[in-house]
Image (cartoon, rainbow, N blue to C red; front, top):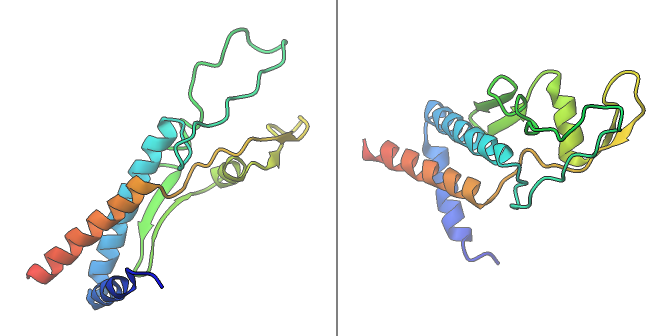
Length: 153
């Protein structure tokens, strides 16, 4: 049995006692902070477990000379494509629009065509979204702040 089970039950009761608007505000704030932490982690080119992303594959000789100097996923991690929203039940960070497919290919390491005329390429798994220890601490901190403010009044 989990030794924190009684604490988790009390915490679930406290969250349930919040008004729907307060829960929505709390989950929206959690989602925004999670998006920020995910963006920073993607910028550092790290998976949620702290390991670095797999390096890009070498391009054929007929391509450009030299190494590719830009980071992977620079546009993908912007607020335009990475949306955060909170509902009464959940805080959600997701990719939207046409980039969703590309993000899933990299997240899970699937096969995809880089463009319409090329052959399929097997991509390395580069987890873009995920929960790590700092994310859990961030959620706990926001939860405690919201609960302390709601019961202070």
